[in-house]
Length: 259
Image (tube, rainbow, N blue to C red; front, top):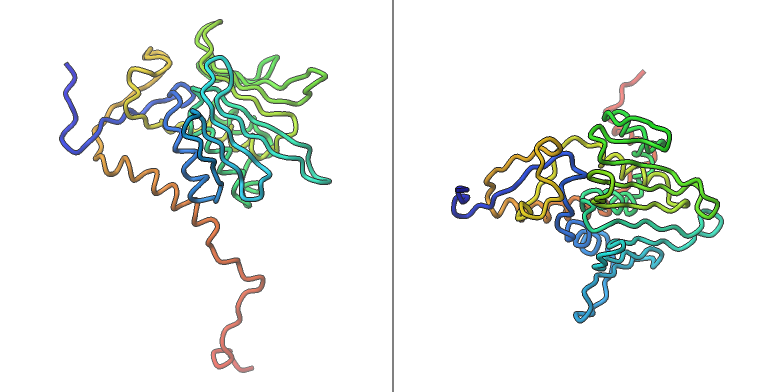
């Protein structure tokens, strides 16, 4: 019999590899976009969906239960003389931390300079291996390939499977998706740090200890809740930092050495 956590605490599971940790709480994506990044949302309580629009109305994130299709869709309007319209989609069991890596990079003006130019790079450093069609995770449950079809050349497809036929989740990056967003996703995917889940013990895609490592720990309930609030504050701070001075300030004249 499992021992219940102490009063005032919740049991948290630390799960790795992260691509088999299950979807997690959608609020990890939607709440910071609204509260820290200024994305607006509609108010239709009769529809089981969330639609968020960027402040410039160029990007739209849609979360809608669709058992036989993608749950998350991010679309972006074309940018004049820069980039055609593009889209990204994620299945229901895509870990929200991986989706958040994409939306965080999209809303961070400095993200392009801080992500790898080759999306495969962080995965190769984490032990993923190249094969004839793309790249595969060390446990052989995740594959990333690039489309070579005429209608979508250069599109990226991420597929997580258990065996030959049991698909866990799939993500698609359209051919015109900014490379730094794909790099942000693969960097988060390659991160060896486990993902935290509460209340997901019965809904993990797999419990096989040969494929996942799960460590349970009792954590104060207020600390578990505070993680989202801290994330919101951190992302909001990106938009309130003072701009860097273009030139270094000079010391006061009376502190300068005379010749």
